[in-house]
Image (tube, rainbow, N blue to C red; front, side, top):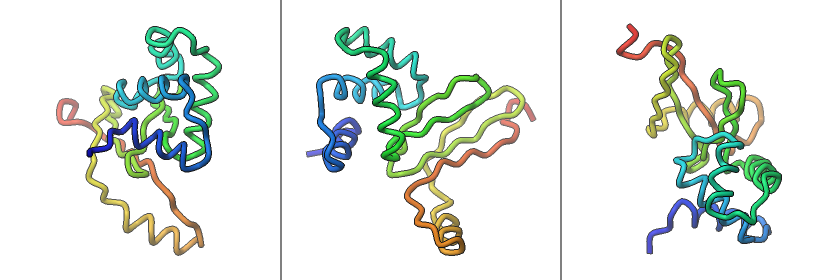
Length: 141
């Protein structure tokens, strides 16, 4: 049986002792369906459409909890509001164009060794990472 990303998030919450309420399940499903790149307000709107019993504050509290557990991270890409991203396997990577603001995601994790070296140097246990490279995309060069 292949676990979906929603199943993985639900399992992570359960493993930490958190209840999987109907509201949390609806929020997790909306987060995964959105592609894991969404603002809190947009997520709340999607959740309310599919599960009208879920309040906006429940969405915000759940985002805070997921952030504390390292399952998502807020990113700020010049929009003012945080966008939340899923940390697949504890990491996420972007390249951001400084001219047109295009965001290119990539899955190849080329910083695992660097995270280990930095963790050892500063006596820090690295549990995940978010990497953003800034530069110019092929259209803006």
